[in-house]
Image 1 (cartoon, rainbow, N blue to C red):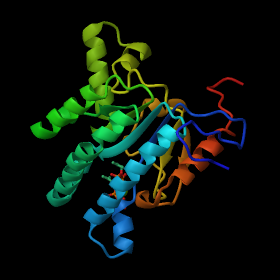
Image 2: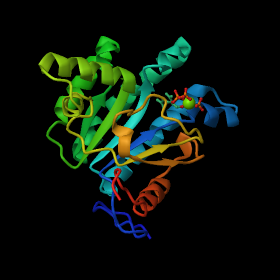
Image 3: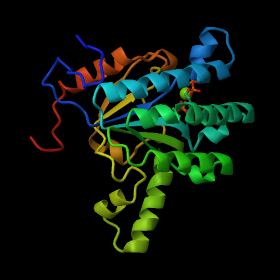
Image 4: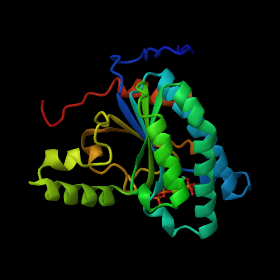
Length: 239
Ligand code: IPE
Ligand code: IPE
Ligand code: MG
C-alpha cells in the first residue's frame, strides 16, 4: 500500500527499482470533454488540474525528473481558438503554481523551442526558471513548442558549431541535457505512438500505455506505472 506524506514512498511490487526520470505524453483532453458534451477547452482546463496533481505526486513518489508534453511543434495545426486557450492556460498555470514549486523544491525547466512563443510567455517562463533554478528535489520539464526532430536538428547544429558531431556532443546539446536519462515513458488515452516526443531520449526507455484520458489520470495510476517499471528487465543490448 502507498502511504501519503512528504517522504518518497516505497514501491512494493517487483524489485524496487525506481525510475529517476519519467516522461508523460498527456493525451486525451479533447476526448474527455467530448464524452461529456463539453467544449474542448474544459478538457484542457481539467488537464491542467491533473498536471498539478501529478507534479505533486512526482515529488511524493521521489522522482528526480518529470517531463510533460504540453504543446508539440505540430499542435500549431490546431484551430487558433484552441491554441489561444492552451496558451492562456499555460500563463495561468505558471502564475498560480510558481509559489508551490518554490515551496516544494521543484525546479522548472522548459524544453522545446519556447522562444518562438509570445514574448510575454517567454519572459514569464524565463523568470520562473530563474526563480526555481536552485531547487533540487524534482525537476519539472515542460515541453512547449517541442518536437523531437526539431530538438535534434538544433542539437546537431550546436554540436557542429562546437566541433565533431558525436552521440555525446549531440546529447550534450539536447534540451534535456542535465536531466537523468529517460527511464519510463507514459502515454495516456490509448494512443501508442511517440508523436515526435523524446525521439533520442526514448532509445532505451521503457514504455507504459493506459487507456485513461489525461484529465482522469491519477497518482495511483502513476504509482501503478512505477510499480510495473520496477519489474521490467532492461538489457541495453547486452544479455
Ligand atoms: C492533449 O489532449 C493536449 C494537447 C495535445 C495539447 P488532446 O487535445 O490531444 O486530446 P484528444 O487527443 O483530442 O482527445
Ligand atoms: C501529442 O498529442 C502532443 C501532446 C500531448 C502535447 P497529440 O494529440 O498532438 O498527438 P497526435 O496528433 O494524436 O499524434
Ligand atoms: Mg491528442
